[in-house]
Length: 87
Length: 274
Image (cartoon, rainbow over all chains, first blue to last red; front, side):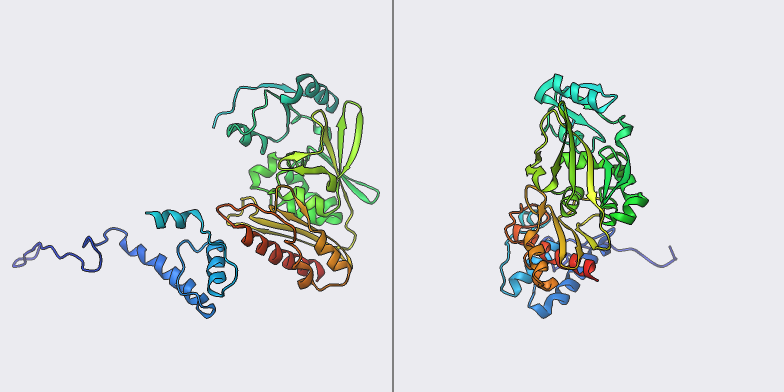
């Protein structure tokens, strides 16, 4: 450490989530999922799709299109989505 | 994941295998490559008390021309079906479909006879041979008989084979100049099809088999009827899911499976027509 410098500690809760926590370690990988999901929603936006739950499985994408276009949808999502919703 | 206790006997000939299965009654099962039966036994969905191993019956492993048919021994491994020059020339749809079964390990052990006798509607070869108008040869204590594929699949994992009959040969017609296509929709290459379609077309003649669209492999007769009456590929493919009753699972709902059947049939007929 260079002469004349000092290290100070402090607590600054993150205001954007209820626990105030910040990601560490591989936190930056977390951007990948919303990035891809936003791209999927963007690709389907012309059909009126505004939101889609992960994962973007063929069934979930098809259901999103069916619901947005007012056609018969199945109301069924695959298991990973259900687990996420229940968490 | 450990099977229930069972006895094991190895047959040295088809006749001996049939005799052994007769001695041990309804609780005995033939085992060939073991790639369908053993997983069921490990899950204890099947609990045969005796396994009659036909794995050494190498005289049931062959592919040969027989007039306007190709005869395939029941013990022929998927890898040999996939790579057969005879099938590539005369029945390329079947050779290609075999290349989609499982992964290389499965294709080196699993047999065409085992796949068809197991009759899982989600397997590729039952629906493919059904679409091709295949005939299956069964050998029992009183001789052999031929069973049309369209009469063979009776229900979920149930065939018209008697308990003491051994499937010995699969006979498929030579395809001549027919166009063909095999469409398999799945999320991982080695998986069973979420939905699959095997199709061939020669002018107004066609055959379309559906994989995993019900408890048995399905012949899409409505599609072929539309083709023979001069309908477009689009209009014919719209009939693909008519009358089907597929199951819903984690990968697909009933409605999505029916959608896939129509889309994959359209792709298959387009490829087979071009």
